[in-house]
Amino acid sequence: MAGATAKSDADPIVAMSRDALNKGSKSFALAAKLLPRSVRDDAIMLYAWCRHCDDEIDDQELGFAAAAKRSAAPLERLSALYQKTAQALRGEAREPVFIALSRVAAKHDIPERHPFELLRGFEMDVGERTYRTLHDTLDYCYHVAGVVGVMMAMIMGIRDQATLNRASDLGLAFQLTNIARDVIDDAKLGRVYLPMDWLEAAGVPEHAIAENVHRQAVFDVTQRLLREADVYYKSALHGMGRLPFGAAIGIGTARRVYRDIGRVVGSRGSNAWDGRAIVGKKRKLAAALSGSVAAIRAQTLLRLLPSPSREGLWTMPNLGVTNFR
Image (cartoon, rainbow, N blue to C red; front, side, top):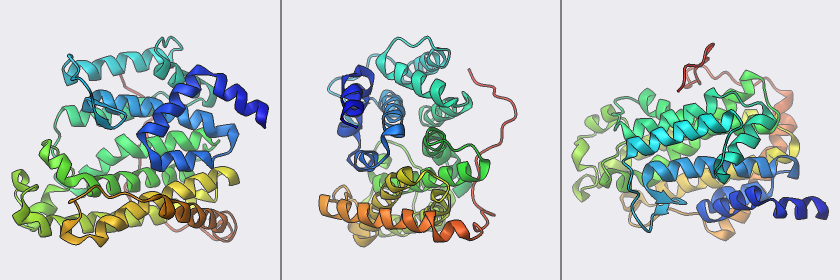
């Protein structure tokens, strides 16, 4: 065990990826520590590539404001991501973060459609897409998070479509939670991910989401979104029983931590965005315990029962042919 850890620490690509994780996501960093060594480094390397792409589009560094603005326009940065990702998938990567993707994709035979689907999600941001309905919002959530769940599941050895759909469900739930947490900050940047028809029904103009006068109405819409997230959290639980046991513990922890973020938002009422909703260390430790219990339940009792239908849930597209740049 110690030898494997030392070898991993000496690998500069893994070390770079671990540093990105520790600085970019305290929530997933905890879950990653609970993953078995057989998949941990690969999951961390995939995270590093995803984090890098997100930062390039949002002009950030590890999820926070960059020290200096990038000179290239968003469309140019997106085009560069497409090109470098394509090179990585051909085994021609030169930059560490793309070498990380190249390793993971080759080792686990991840279809090229999935990394490109993530980039298409960022393309929606660059193109300032309008999300008219919940289906539109879920389409975005799949492309920036659901597909990450799919790739993570593939790293853990999953290939059957039913379980991959459950993995996508967890990513969808994570992203719906992120939208609820960041709705005001996003609106100030001109990004609105809440379904427009929900906002219109609540009497909230698109351009006025961040105004205090609409705070209660926006909170009510956000609560509706979090109830939708819960549907996907519950569905994802039934996929955890198909993961290797050690992996289920880590994923169960991540599931609980992110779900708790939504609960923090919900507990604050219309003051939800006065400060960033976070889950403290004690609550994260409790989440690790609770997530482990949920994983054990999924691996035992739930595995013996028929999985509930996913009818009515957003489902990842079944593409017979890829058509990416």
